[in-house]
Length: 218
Length: 231
Image (tube, rainbow over all chains, first blue to last red; front, side, top):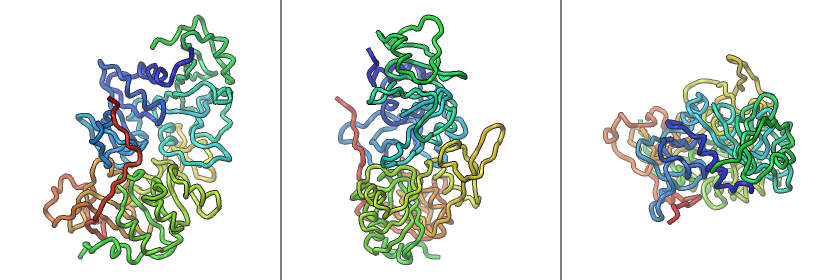
C-alpha cells in the first residue's frame, strides 16, 4: 500500500530532531507540523517573517495580520518572533534553518529539483523556493513517486526548468524513502507491501538497492 | 519639516504615469490599502510595481490591474489572480519573476546604499541567464542589483509625526525594506501619534527613511486563506 499524504508527513516528522529550526513548504510539507513528536521541541519558520509558528486559529480568532507563507491564518507559540523578509531569507541563506521540507515536480539523481514552472502553463512564480533550496543545510522532498500519468518523478535529469541544483538530500514519496547520494537514489525504506521491483520500475533515475530494504514504519 | 499629509490622495499626488513603485505586503497582509485606492482613483497608467504578489482580482494590486494601470509587475509569486493571467497571456502586461529572498535583498541593498549583492538563489536555473556570477569559498553566487524605485508605498501599524514606524505581526514582511528603498517613501498607518509617544527602543523603521505619513482609514484587511483548527 502506497503511503497517503498524511503518512508521508508522518514519516518525515521522524527526521525531526530536538532544537531544529524547520521551514515547511506548502502542501504535504505543511502536514508535517501535525506529527512533531511530543518529546522534542521544533521551531517552525515561516518565510514571510515568523519563527515560532503555531497551529491554525480557533474559528473566530483569525487575525488578518498573522499569516503563514501559504497566506493561511495561523497562530504563534510562546517565544515566537516576527521579522522582515530580508532577515527571514538572511537566516535561511546563512544556514540557520536546519531543515527545509518542500514538494517537487521532479528530482534528479544528482539532487536537482524542479518545482516552479511548467513550460506552456501560466507561471505563478518561484516564491521563496529558489532561496530555500540554494541555501538550506538539509532538504527533504515530500512528493508522489509518479505524476498523475504514472511517469516517474525521480529522473536521471530533470526535464522541467530547475529551481535549484544538487540540493535535495532525501526524498519521502508515497512508495519509498530514498537518500540522494553521489551516484543515484539510494533506497532506504519501502512503503508497506510495496516491492523493491515496483519502486525500481517507477524510478527512472538510477536506483541503488543494497541488502534487505525494510518497510516504512509509521 | 512636515511629514504628515492629510490622506492618501495628498500622499500620492505627484506620482505620474510610468512611475516605478514599490508596494509593501505579503499576499493581502500588510498592503497599503488606502494608497492603492487613491492610485486607482487617480487613474495613472504605465506603472511598474515591485511587490511580492499582485493581489487578487478585486483587492490589493488586483484593483490597479483591473484598471490596466500596471505595465510591469516585479514579484516572486503572482497566483490567485485571473485578470493578471488574462493580461499576461494577452501580452498586455510584463512580468519579471524573481526569488522572494532576492526581492527582499534587492530592496534592502537600496536602503543600505549598496549597489548590488551576491546571492546563491537561482544559481544553475534560468533566472541566472545573463547574470554575472562569482565563486566564494567554492560556492557560486549571482550578482543582483539594488532596486531603483521612484516611490515606496508601505503600510505600518503605528507611526509618529517624525515618520518613525512600527509594524504588526507578519504584516511587517517587505514593508520596512521598501520603506528604506524608495526615493520618496509614503507610509500609511493605522494609528498616527505625536512624536515621543512611540518607544524609541521598538521602532522598526527610523523616520529618516519616511517622507510622507498619514493615518489611513477603513482598513478591510481581507484574509486570503481563512484557515481554522478542526474540532
